[in-house]
Image (cartoon, rainbow over all chains, first blue to last red; front, side, top):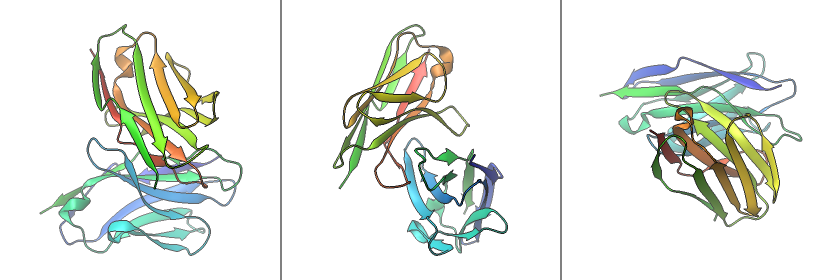
Length: 114
Length: 111
């Protein structure tokens, strides 16, 4: 079975500071992993995905994430936070074969302080 | 390119009234389709998914139902709404493994 845990339901950073959002996964098979972003009253937008190619994945808006099998982690980072990054972020996992569904974490709300 | 539509965008309904939310996808064929719900301050809860016309899998037993009358149309319904049905309803589609793409959502308030 697959699941994800997002550590910290709320994260606050200053504008220009490093953004680090944590995601740990549990999977009985090598996983596919995703990060989504949700702005208020909008749907989810795919930021980036890991599908067993390069372990360091670059996404939109300057975000990137690194797949670490030994730590079962897929943390999301951005070197310098911008005010427009304030949103809710969701990590998700899927089994690579025969799976129809994604399993989402409970989300992390990012606040950027000017 | 593919686009996904949901309507209505917002809805206020009294307890006990029926519900019908619609989702349509353009630019793809035979997608997997999904309905999720977000309650206030909570994560995403998968309600239903469909791998084809007339094929519906229910993830959570409740007073909601889903139907897929056409390849790119997915409908979420209820005969009698409960207060606990309030939330933000999201439709999503998937063709290639395994990312899903989400619609703009419907904000439902049951009063």
